[in-house]
Image (cartoon, rainbow, N blue to C red; front, side, top):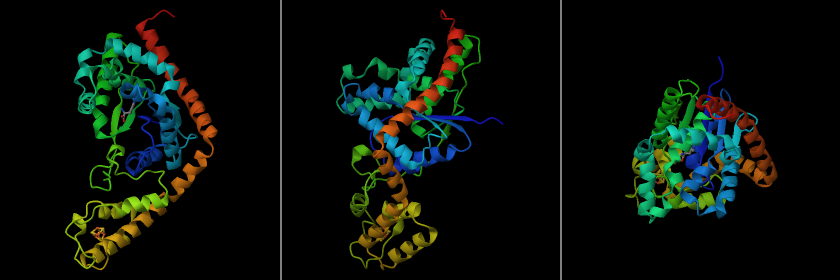
Length: 335
Ligand code: TRP
Ligand code: SF4
């Protein structure tokens, strides 16, 4: 049986956090062994909202790549590429945009949410660009350009995959062909990781722990985490199930024995929250040590990172070219 092809991209938002690591990257890493994987940095998608903030674009792209390689994304197993190094995707985007009814893009719920958030943050009509409306069509081009069977994404991206399927079907109907493959979303079981304040972990909430944080920073951040709010003194009996951040983290980072011990000691008032957090920080740091060491290695070899991405993009282009050739033939542009 031939390998399935798997594709996913991430916007270059800068340093990634533990939510990305546990929820996305460990899953991408697992998929590498038995599939034909394409992992890309969507720098064009970043421009759909940040076209006027490009001074950090390159640095943010590098940070994301460092976090990927540190987490085990392996350029010998997967094609790791940069969206803007695949001109075929821009060309495919043009062809797809012609057959996509305008209101399909306008109805896209994820896009609507993005626009809503931008408006709340004070964006005016001029910062909502033509390129932003094309967000789902560009994403369709990313996916269809590589014949992807599966696209591992979070639930918020599923609407985009639905549009991709609709566009593929419409293209195939119009040009009486079957060249575009309808992809399926592969929902990642994301164990929703909370930030230190109990809200969803996110860069903009300033409640996150970065993959790249050092041990001291990690410990400091964990020491600020909220705990069972009814517990004031060390000897008060605790309620792990009402401890919204620290206890769930123990379940992720500790083994069964450790989790049971914490639970017991907390319920009996034998351990204080500060001590509990210090132990947890140690666990998290242990678990992340190899990843962080690997990140350091790549940080000190940035030319290697650049080489990997240039080579990966070259490899990825071969497939992208094949699909684009078929598309241009089907559309019958002059060749
Ligand atoms: N929109 C995705 C996100 O914000 C990023 C993305 C761009 C993507 N192109 C893609 C994801 C293609 C999967 C497939 O997370
Ligand atoms: Fe949470 Fe640990 Fe405090 Fe119990 S002892 S409330 S598990 S931080």
